[in-house]
Amino acid sequence: MSAPTAPAELFRHSLKLLLDKNIADWVGLWAEGGVMEFPFAPPGWPRRLDGREAVASYMRHYPDHIDLHEFPELRILQTTDPRTIVVEMRGVGRLVETDVPFDMTYIAVVTVEDGHITSYRDYWNPLAVQQDGADFAGSAR
Image 1 (tube, rainbow, N blue to C red):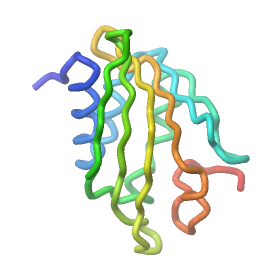
Image 2: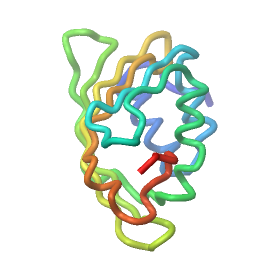
Image 3: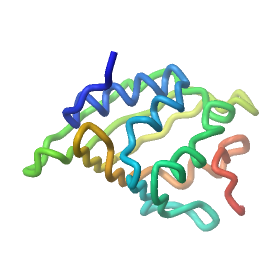
Image 4: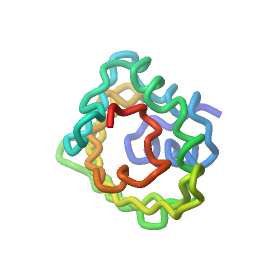
């Protein structure tokens, strides 16, 4: 089955892939030159990832550190640009290393072109990564 191409459906599909820990297919939703940005990233964490390979490298070990169980609160808002959505959501699970509960609220601005993510600005809470076991991105902290 191929991935949906409309932004909201593609995003919902991407969440299912994350829950299934299918990082390879999740990365496959990205355009070759897609950009992921983290405007609230703390010092030592990346603020921008340029290209699918950079996103793949960043996400490669995500399931080894964060075991997502659900996205219980998901709101997808359409913008005046049909390619762009604003997403409000919570990701709930546990930190693998410590078995501590993980509960993060996100706001993301996502643009999809030709069925692939071209831009993803992720406004996540930088305080959450100060917990032991949350450092999946190999930060310098």
